[in-house]
Image (cartoon, rainbow, N blue to C red; front, top):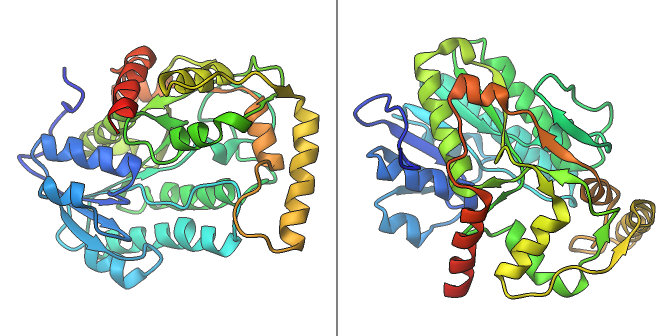
Length: 339
């Protein structure tokens, strides 16, 4: 079965993808177009690459209820991918995009009697600063969040879970560390900071990742299965390569494919955490723009294990990662060479 093949729900769906110009959103759009769905992208700006695929584009702010409502007209299915990511920034900006934006999508789906909503969440919504090794979806939210992104994504996730029992059929996916060609977030950050990267912790912490095509495939499979099995509505699923690797080995593999040297220097988790705490105070006190090189949340993320039991996604959604890490790295290398 090819990567873009999955169970078709109808001859042709009218599908809205919020954040369709982004990394994951764009990959979902491509797979939908390839299988014959009519696709609308809702993003802040116009993307020529989407226009080249014949995708209708609507520009707007996900925090604008009217704009979202108009984008959802005559739509059968919504993939809500748009979000404000990152580990630093103004809380209200995160809240407007991640929480209010999701509330706007839910309200628009209800108003237009849209049958299905697939929401892109994050495993960070359950991260409490300690190792997560083989955990499943039963793990609770932490008592306290140390960054605005996971806090607001958790709030949005809970809203999507709740509405799953109210007529709108929903599924929530938690992909971890998406990477691959066209990446505009993780891979560029690693490459840009190659000369100043430092290992945090002992370097042996295992993490899950997910190749971009696998992540997109999982979203489309979730939507198709939800059409057939409404009992899955409101459920949450971790998705990954199902192949945890040492975090810094993965970083070094990406650097290698970019023709760069591996990370050699290291500092302890406690040292990184203290540096992050100081930088956070400094940035807040002097209202410095941009993002600190280290935060307490980032220190915890870089030094702890994060890998997940994806048995539920395999069983309920039929999800299997079709592109291996090695194949994905080869594709990434070709893309980096041809940019």
